[in-house]
Image (cartoon, rainbow, N blue to C red; front, side, top):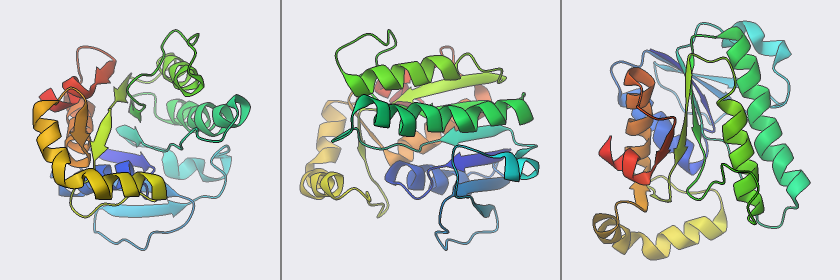
Length: 219
C-alpha cells in the first residue's frame, strides 16, 4: 500500500507516521510538509510544498496512491469563524479535491474530532466547521472516505505536541492518562491506537463512514 500523509510533524501525525513505517503492508509514505523534518527512513519521502491551497505544481508526484491519511489541524482558540474555516475547511478540501481527481480509487481518512457537528447548525463554531468539512469530504468521488473523531489523544513513544498549552496538559496528566483510558475507553485513545486503526480501515474498510473513539479502540 502506498500512502500520502498530511500533518506528519504534528502530534497526531507523528503517531500515524510511526505506525505507517512499522506496518509491513505499507511500502511507501509520501509526507507533504511545509518544512522538512529531517526524518529519514527507507519507506519515507518528504515533499516540501509551501502552498497547501494549490497543488497544481506537484500533481505528477501525487498520483498512484492507495490512501491518504489527513491529520492537519489547528486549534480554533482566538480565531473567528472565517479564519478557522479557511485553515480547516478550505485547506482540507483543496488537498482532498485534487487527490480525488488524481486518485479516484483512493481511500481518504480524515482526523476530525469528538463533538463534530454533522448538522452544521450547532452553537459551537469549530464543530460546525468540522461538520461541514466532514460532510463535503464524504461527497467527493473517492473510492471511500472515513472520518475519525477521537476525543482525548494520549501521545506515546516520546511524541510531543507542538502546541505549548496542549503539551503542558499532557505533561501534567500523562501519568494518569493510562488509568483514565482503561476506565473511559470511549473518551481517550492514543497516538498508537489511532494510527493503527486508520491503517486497518485503509486496508479493510469499516461498516460506517464516521468513527468515534470507541470504534477506534475496537479496531
